[in-house]
Image (cartoon, rainbow, N blue to C red; front, side, top):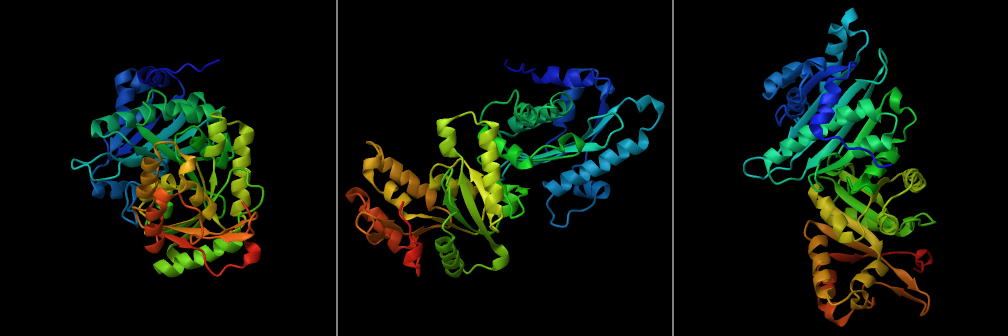
Length: 436
């Protein structure tokens, strides 16, 4: 049976009429959009103990402390806001009047589109709340990218997201998938991206955080989920900004581990070619989800558990992992460009390039498809490191020098190889070259 989706005002009113939900709203950057929704819904005195903004940095620092990195739209800032507001709430509201309350503290720090439209609108949204009267608090913290081209629309989206979050915490806490899905209730497709979520507390003690973030990708809320070597979810831009990134692409349900012998050579070439400082180097393995999504738009828990297990298995090799829905390499390159890394290397089997530069794999739109690939792939400091494969039929190792290329694509392919946009992996041991 389909879930009934209440419109935003009804959600806010239902929270306001809930005799247990009671808390504070602290918002920085885009106005008091969330609190406003609760005030205009009516009966807000039953829910709101305090609502505030601290726009000036001096006021914000005096309340929550300064940020060492100077970034006020950050996970660190929203966590400090939650710490401060929740502590005040529980310290001050101790009389018998509040004995039956489930306290919450809502916080967000957001930047919407500026007047000249030159910034990257995004923000952090968090809720600390009790799922049991008198119980230990839980946390839901997530990062959003605001995609509308108008600041007032982005403010409206922010207000709806906040109401959805508070509602989900009080009415969907027993079903994490529904809780996640409900965050975008009453929002139009393409208005927001949720690219990371962190859950903690007693209500989530049995929740696999990797599965939750993979669910964001499966539902189309995000294009990719990133996990560090320890398997902890990371926000993409925080993790990759101004880094030198090299990524190995792997196939869905690839039974064996990637060819690390050749990939390690690609990493060595990349670090030498761009002069990488090791503290800026990020080595990642990509696990594609897109092939499965093409076959089954609705992934089962078993499917997601496979990806979570695969991510954990690859993390154990000492590499960072990105699980994505980028069916083509140029989509991965375009995604990375938004994160503003210094340099990007994408390592792939040359057989994938063979498919791209073969017009037989396309229809009449081959020229357009090829130009789209090249412009998206190589526009932002991206190089492809292609490792060879063995053509078993002819017992020949295939590199860029002898890879079959359609005549109409030959000039473009040679331009890319001669100008070192596509680079052969060198000094390999032929024993490690495999068939495809």
